[in-house]
Image 1 (cartoon, rainbow, N blue to C red):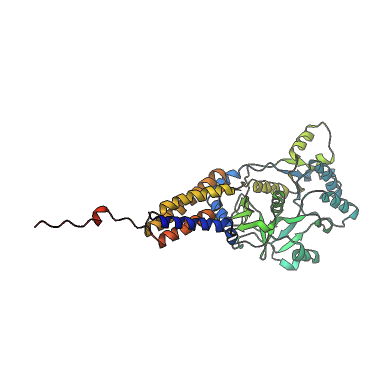
Image 2 (tube, rainbow, N blue to C red):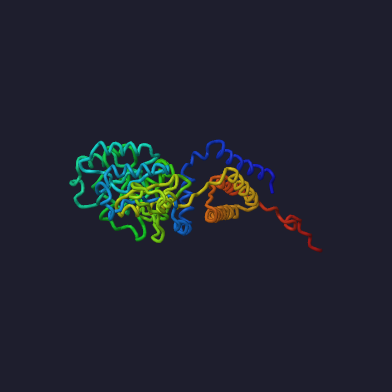
Length: 416
């Protein structure tokens, strides 16, 4: 092999890697790594489905039971009931407190609602649910308060990269939390009446209002628990639909932005009445203490929607955690690819193209295999930084085989 050609090939590969890591080349292609993670997730959906069968143990439902409503000061529960329950819950240092119902009372008494707000201020994260509907009444049914809520306060997760027409939608808000409480937490959709386009066994994680993507209580609770800002989230609704919480957590969805919730598994339930009237020494006290634990998501509800919300949060939290390989491993991958590039340099013009394509297929297959077995992914940029200049160089300056000895020897003279 021509040594000059080999040295120049090595210089081209080294320059490409130097540009990638030192010259800011990675910043020139910010979408490559997220796109590659999307590709890997789309090819491992069966593994994700198996993983999500076991729900997270970090979610607890505190239920105000309607069959015990005579034990409370009012029904639905009054602010005082929530205050008493929160005082007991606060001892367990929850990471997120999520209310699956709209906390709004007619003829509110400030002397009770304000203390409830003060109790919730001490919590790291609070989510309030608001109720929506997709009835034909539309904007005509909006009150001035709900109209102002839609225009200025309703949360939005930005835009999806695909069409959102298949998502469950709503066109009016029928119940919002008290304005006194809204200032201390995030908000999310509780139920979407009148929509039935989500597959059986799935629960919507996101909803659509006109062109806005609105999170549910479950989505808000998960993102607050994972401490993921909206700016690093990516929603895909096409093939392999998913909500990516940065590059680490990915929640598999279906085309309607719903998450699969296994029916055979449930979350621990604590009776709110036990928190209001605790009796030391009874078996339920120890059971409730263990269920509430520490640093969990506490879902509080007085309706049947609370159980579904808690299970949806648990299913979303059960999404597998993906890890990016360290830069050391990127260099190892780049080195192995460079060794293969030296073999590519021994091929002709057509052979180098075929060999370059084969290296791409090999690297993609190896990446999928590693991701399926260990949920670790490595950026494809180092591989591209080696294969691209190598293939181009070998095509422009192809390897030429040395002529065989018998071809260069002069022909023997014919005998006279």
